[in-house]
Length: 349
Image (cartoon, rainbow, N blue to C red; front, side, top):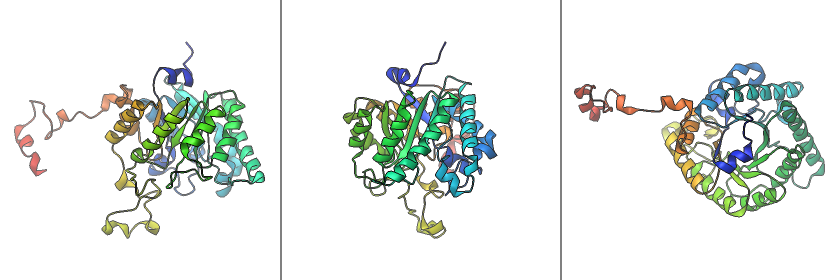
């Protein structure tokens, strides 16, 4: 039996897409923060494969090829532009391999180029060429749909969508919303989403930059503005109204702030702001109740976040076998066979 495609799945319920490979593989010691180029795809492919598998077991319906920042501009910065095609094709192959181990979809991926500039035709042509080569390799690999993500210019998103629509595959476009709540070319996110939907995007929404608390109000506005499906993939950090993006978070403990590189928490000193799995679960329930069906977690996500999201949506993925059961804990547990003395000592722990 052929697997259901993205739009059929969304018509019948939520779709979970795990993102954020960059941060997790950096934490594991296989990728460099700063450049954030997915060299790991070629240098340590087994680590990418294992992370895909971890997310699949945790409940992700999608294996997204790790081609985020595997574009010409990023590889130029680290002197590996010659590895552009091999890196993309290897990432797509790894995604397909793991997706076949379950009932997962394979998504191709393009993203912010970091070179786009409004009203610059020459740069727009360069951006389009970068998207075209990555999309071509994704189509040749047989992906089920294509994602354009973390784009903060509507003009760049327009180019990405135009390239993706040529493939006739389903399209997902998610925008990154920075501190002022507008795209960099001045559009409100709901207006940008409406324009993308009118141009044929199948799913529109937000990903990255904002945590659950500061993303949810905006995706609700997008939900009200468009007829197509809406996506929400926050970063798992406790962003606030004052510091609405994870780039803007600042260390609050004066005893710790002095040791931060350049005094900046982003990107590798965000640990104090980490959202719990329970916060991600709550976000998933609230977003789904608001009519948002394409859900996930972006940079900073671990498999435990995806499992919590899946469980909040009523699922029990394979990794749920190991979901917490504190009834067996030696001190906090309630199992009648536990030693009463340990339970009575809880207040001293």
